[in-house]
Amino acid sequence: MRSEQLVRPRVPDGAADATAVAHPNIALIKYWGKSDERLFLPRTDSLSMTLDIFPTTTRVRLADEAEHDTLTFNGRPATGEAARRIVAFLDLVRERAGLGRRAVVDTENTVPTGAGLASSASGFAALAVAAAAAYGLDLDAAALSRLARRGSGSASRSVFGGFAVWHAGTTTGTATQADLSSYAEPVEAGGLDPALVIAVVNAGPKEVSSREAMRRTVDTSPLYEPWALSSKADLADMRAALSRGDLPAVGEIAERNALGMHATMLAARPAVRYISPASLTVLDSVLRLRQDGVPAYVTMDAGPNVKVLCRRADAERVAETVRGAAPGGAVHIAKPGPGARLLSEDG
Ligand code: DP6
Image (tube, rainbow, N blue to C red; front, top):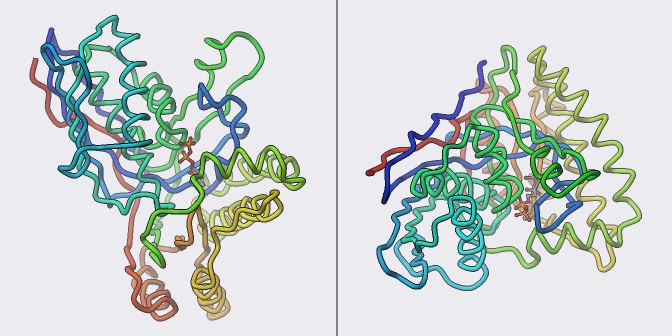
């Protein structure tokens, strides 16, 4: 399978109005821990699959004489931390563009926010593409990935479709060198025909943000460094498994990497625990499926929801199993999806 490439925005002339769409991604090799919080530099490389469901669509229009940015999220004014992050991101774009003009930003998000389903990844990837076009920045795919990273680390990967690896980059040298060294790029996955079955056991917002949780893990967990080290080996194994299209190997590596990440959090002080009893019930059901000969493997992020990697041909059966294990919760089937792209712009 070929990873889809980004549709590069045409740079508009003058005042602009641009709309972009991006999809969430789920990491098979996790990003957990930053080496620089301001620049969103990760401690380890990570690798993900962009999904074909739950898109975020973001429109950025430059305002004529406004003093503040106007932000709406699913038709309602954005507030609090979410608004602060978007304004900080726009400030970065303005600084690069040498333009002070405020923006009107409308975001339509279809993923349950804050439930460990990576809504910040699709959100900042769409915002990066739309804002870069609206403010007239001519950025290639790697530069857009770097820019998206400054809104949320995992957004760097949603710039690309299919599978993408995000390089941690270097921490030696200047801040500019470090910034330039950390971006995502597509990874080929020969012959793989995967699906990701998402069991939403709880769609509410999480209690501890991933930002706070990863900080606490890096600062206090004795298991963090060993996991980061093993994650390096996991990535090398994952790349090899992907290139030969070996789904059971991809699944096994993804599962061990994710469970290891959760182990680092459980050992943090105080512990961060996203795995709930309902998650464990789903995990058990996937284990039983595997014993029945269905190659299915779990991964989990900063929330209790469980994502199950399997062959596309097995997706319905896997969905049925996890639905039975987590009655009442929604179950979604995702396949590899497209990279972020510009829908329209009006110069
Ligand atoms: C567990 O990208 O949401 O989903 O960079 O602080 O915005 P910030 O964090 P975020 O963290 C994602 C963590 C993860 C693993 C992953 O997606 O790789």
